[in-house]
Image 1 (spheres, rainbow, N blue to C red):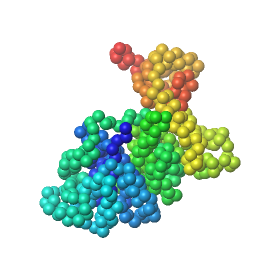
Image 2: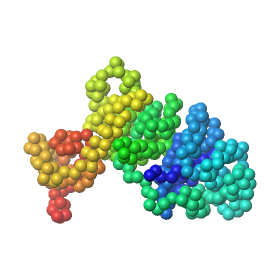
Image 3: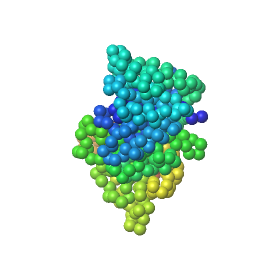
Image 4: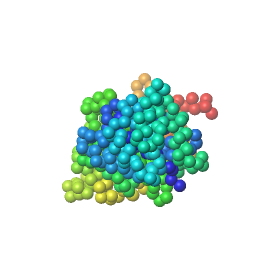
Length: 444
């Protein structure tokens, strides 16, 4: 059974994103004083007193978008309203009823639609007396709240739960895997997300930087639930200021990589690998995330370059992700989308695999016999005594040695690459930890 849906609707800058973040008790939507920051439908599963529902933040109705995306933003708002079991209509108590508030109210006047009117930015009780003005919108007495300061949050929670009549036993379906979709701007990430979802879940535009938030999109495959995280396109750091929307978007993109099970790293088949791509690749590798390098728009590149030639090019330009499989797709035509999700599941299974200590040590013995670590001045001859797997996701191997500082990075890379060949971790990152063997004896 799907969860009830609550859509947050209102004109720009009334505090919709702050309200979502406050109810979810986490920073889901970007909160910024610039009007029009939110464009897509940004959703989160909210747990209130062990009752669950999906809350959806929307863009500001009536915004004059600087990239001419107003029609797309309002289209997303209408979809949110149509899918909602309850609409939270947010107004600004300090500014009173505005013409745009009246337009939103007109859009929400439907016999079958439940609407809860919320007057936000009532930071103190002294502002509550002005709420009577909002009766003219036709949705009864508004609840006065301050999303920023949490004032009357519990009252709003009780009203939402009462309107939804949510059962304590109705919990979200377990998610099999989270996929972070990352890449530079205008590489086709949102088109791919919509293809997965089977609807226009996020705005697709040729305007670079259309997506700003990290948008969780739930989709179903073979009867199981997945989450795909659409992220903002990354650009050069030199073009971002610390307080800009793009800075927050980049931060959300990196956080999405960190919470993902598998990363889909999108690269434009028609563009050379850029410094932005290389920086993203390093970040993914440093986070030890299973990764698929997704070459999008391949339908437009066919005939210009072959897959083997392109793979060789990527090996040279993105050596830190040499273990990552490469998938050639066309998101706009929906080609090889399902196969890509299947491959992601395969990588996730690899990353969660656990091996026995005896199997690992047989591999380490073979590796040492083939090429032992070189002796270094002052530190003596390095030696690996034994190893054990201490974690999965990523596979984390702890090696006990006579001197951790004597085993240099080159030899560690060699060991990791050989372990990939010998163990069931051929396409995922391996984290290698070194510890003095005497510490291991003390632990036993």
